[in-house]
Length: 425
Image 1 (cartoon, rainbow, N blue to C red):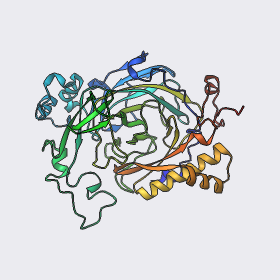
Image 2 (image 1 turned 90 degrees about the vertical axis):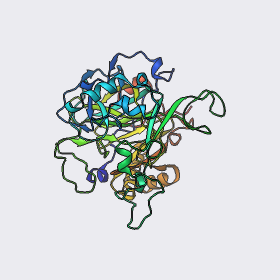
Image 3 (image 1 turned 60 degrees about the vertical axis):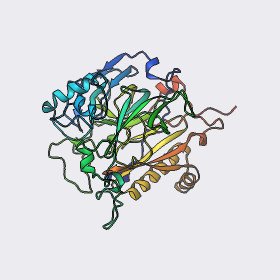
Image 4 (image 1 turned 45 degrees about the vertical axis):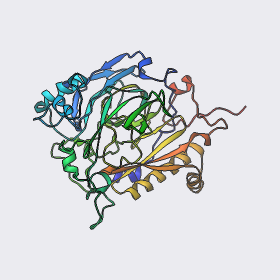
């Protein structure tokens, strides 16, 4: 992917965001704007450049956004209630907006598999700016989610870059086609309840109840956070793939617009930076995950409907070529490509550029520091393009181990400002 080779994170990850509100959860915040996942507010599987904004929000407003999980909403012959009944879910447990979307399915162009809420416009956002997205809260809307498996799903698919002729599939009696056509409960599809653990090691924590003896602590995040792509900026399932016939970017491959990053670091308290390509930015969010390991190796996480609470800031004149971010401990530097080795190379190259700019290092010094300090993980390996994330520790900037920035300094950001850290006493 051509953009990855030139991605230098111009002035994006160098800005530290203000911390989330002290309460630390969406329920503790009073939203200025609430956006519901009604049929009119949801797009199926893509990021249309010409879609009208469903709302325009001001910078600094607290914006609460509902989303709906999509994997069981695309069969016109089976309603969500009928589908979930096969797993023991009662009709009153199914979200009303899920049913409403299904009832209007024939009115929605199908660009891809994800239901995304948007686009949301941010006042003042213009091409050449960077959109700072602070993730203030993420909450589950149901107490169950779905995960998919098949003998040839995820990294065992023949379309996976690591596949070689003669590789043995997994010993699972269904294929990925069976899984995604909504058959084979408990084998190709796994409904997993979520909720608070009442005993044991995870007592008092929200977990996924995989079975009677296995719980996975939840770490909710959105697999898809995107802005409208630039004109002519399409990412396909393979190098050199032609533009989509619809003219709309499919939601599966991530790219310079963000999209299906499936990066589990973007939980509450983290910040994502995205380039603004169109007037208003046009922010999309969806693909809710209650929990996921790095790689998303089976092809899906625990897919679950979520509500997110965000705060948007437009960084004027801070041009960026692709997504980057930060959490409490690390700056998050991404590399994206169809080939995971190339994605790793681009993530390292972007780390080197970031360290040169923010620490005044030579290329050789920055490359050395990256090797000593930065951990790289495969955030996702199964969405046509792969995401490698470098975790650059903030402890490199201050003896306290924290990179901080006060409100005054945050408002004074310019295109040439650099990382602000506490002064040594």
